[in-house]
Amino acid sequence: MLKFALLGFLLRQSMTGYDLAAAIRSSINFVWPAQLSQIYRTLGQLENDGLVVSEVVPQQGRPDRRVYSATDAGRQAFDGWLGELVTELDPVRTPFLVRFFFSGTRAPEEMVTQLRVLRDLHLRQRDQLAHELPGYIAEFAAANTTDDRDPLIWDAVRRAGEMHAQTWLDWIDETIARLEDAAGKAQPR
Amino acid sequence: MLKFALLGFLLRQSMTGYDLAAAIRSSINFVWPAQLSQIYRTLGQLENDGLVVSEVVPQQGRPDRRVYSATDAGRQAFDGWLGELVTELDPVRTPFLVRFFFSGTRAPEEMVTQLRVLRDLHLRQRDQLAHELPGYIAEFAAANTTDDRDPLIWDAVRRAGEMHAQTWLDWIDETIARLEDAAGKAQPR
DNA sequence: TACGCCATGTAACGGGTTACATGATTCA
DNA sequence: TGAATCATGTAACCCGTTACATGGCGTA
Image (cartoon, rainbow over all chains, first blue to last red):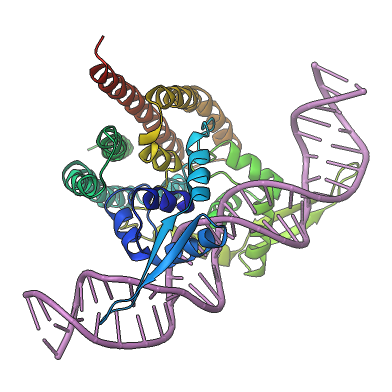
């Protein structure tokens, strides 16, 4: 997966592994984060497969830059991937919900505390996606001379994140209410 | 992660790897699916670590059953895990959104077609979570003599899935509208 | 003086996925 | 007759995570 993301960025603009990490951070980080170590390794694989080539650009006072560019083969691989119609849902692994599923033996107050902590995190996430990410995206769009439709699409991706964060907030509120309601009925007054 | 889920099931009732696969399918499958091969391997690890023990129960006409039970050490490990307060959001990797992010070069109709296919899948998913899963959960609850709070909790987990599926539907509708709106403005009439 | 940025990687580990292998019973 | 169910596993692979290693420059 990361392979195609890197290819996608490199097709717009040649850059280093370090730059790619920054590009990811200011765009798809919330749907596909990546460590530098993995980026470097994946670039090595792409180069082995002939989908990218690299050129070392000497620098003084700091490490030389290794600038990667996508090849024709890289563009073909990327276009092939983009062209695939997705006909199955990817399983969404949600560790917290597994944990929650087994929490029946825990004190209800403990569960509510946990939910409030998560609420904070999702709230921050939602606000970041709603207020900070648009700025990053605008910068990114300005830096990458882009297609007309890109800003719309990037904003749609951002919206998906925002909406899901909001859904978590709604779910948490609903769930806390149900837990408190059940606790109230168990020991009335 | 699977390790703890297996432990969680085994603490309620001893069973085989095959049974565990069925238990997962009728409960947390949509947040944490697992292949049989992985279940067997993980059970092996758990047994190595002394968190479960197994006993072979001979059968005729079919393979012997290897029934696993959680040990005291298993219960302690599980309780320790359950007791941890989660203070960070797990990154949610969404391959489709990565793909979508890079789709600016694709024909808008192609994107809309893709979104409609996904809409169908999420709709089916939502309906399963809203209508079929409650039945499975009820069966599962009946089979496992349970704590009072379990049904509420299990239903909350189910609700999370349902709400997120609904959010996908909303996002897709919104996104199709925006794409069509943009296409309409690009070539008016 | 200390921290963050720039810039490169390697190595080991963990855990989820896919493929392979076997075989009787039951039900449509 | 053929597909689904019961029931066990092994082996290889892929890829994301974590830890380790290095080091100058600019800024607070």
